[in-house]
Length: 120
Image (cartoon, rainbow, N blue to C red):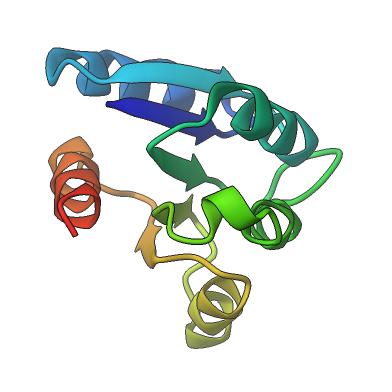
């Protein structure tokens, strides 16, 4: 399974990538929303994980952009972010996210969510 992970925090990205690879996921990394959109188009991931606060294009805008592409209408998109208010969560869901995980988080929680969403 191919996962696109977009987060501008390199350390966090590396930890998540190491954990995902333990479960034999192929991981494509983006460090901003604009790059995430381009990599989604060129790599056709099975699941997309987006941070909200990123340079160039935030995760909400990237989510809307990706959702506007017909082939990604059913692709699971997980928002993984420190933005944790009810308004933040609603904004994420409204932008097209399938689910919303707040930081700090357990890598196991992310893997469980990826597996749950990809089996639907």
